[in-house]
Image 1 (cartoon, helix red, strand yellow):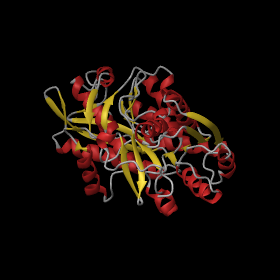
Image 2: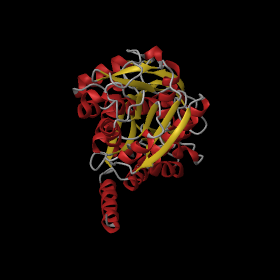
Image 3: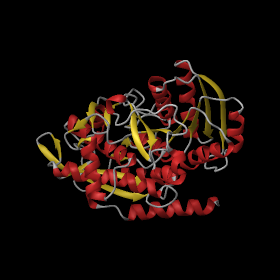
Length: 413
């Protein structure tokens, strides 16, 4: 990539954004509402990845935001004191680039829009967070899970999703609780991006706490489809479990090449990949038995007044968009819900009052529990662990939200 055209594109994008400022973002704003509400409208802004490498995830994220707007308004809007405000969300395409996502957050501030729904992914959210802090805005983070985002002392970024360290830790906990016979050794294979490294660190720490022995810990280039060297090295350690801190491409490669190389642990556990339809579609029967972690499934326990239960949320997504709810949909809606509940709790759209209310949220929802620690992370919501059984992703942990029992040993189903 050539730096000069990146810069030119970013500058061009921001110029178009500034030229396209809508009246609802600034008209009628004042000190009493921090520029968040105009008349009877509660205005939120979002940089969204509608083009570029994250376009698919960005589309699902926007679906989640759009459903939030629809459902909240169908219930009469957001109660703010003695008024009810209609929720309105504006979108600008960040082209899947962190610098553009940050610049869009800045442009919203210039329009007087202080309440922001995050872009997709940790790099984009990481770029937005310092801008949000500087501007006195509030960022409700739907999909930036990397712990590093929350290590800078920011007071205005709140992540509704479980942190990156829980992605693999949840599977280790599930195996510890449910597997019989209980395995003793784990090999960790990780992509070398920041998110996957954080995931692997959480796996190591949790495995040590629960008495597992980590016999191998290797990394490979993010996005690779050749993990044969790492698998060959792991095979020599004869691990009971191979755990992948990976994305879809690497996750498929691990299972496929393990089969080719004759690597047969008691079970595989991987982040990100197994809950996606592409995983079972690509691997066929070889996908069966693989564990995966996910931010949400339709069996999550909890409900709220806007979306009801997780199953009711799933039905609402299907009715509007024609497909089953994806966890990207759900985490985006949850981020929007958190801002709505904070405004309602504050009885004001003033950003300082909303920030304080957001920090004090402690509520159940269709997404699970929403509560933030001092760093702004939702460490109070467990992730779900699924297992691919007969080609379907079935929830096996936590057991109070399970719709299937863990099959173990998991390989050779």
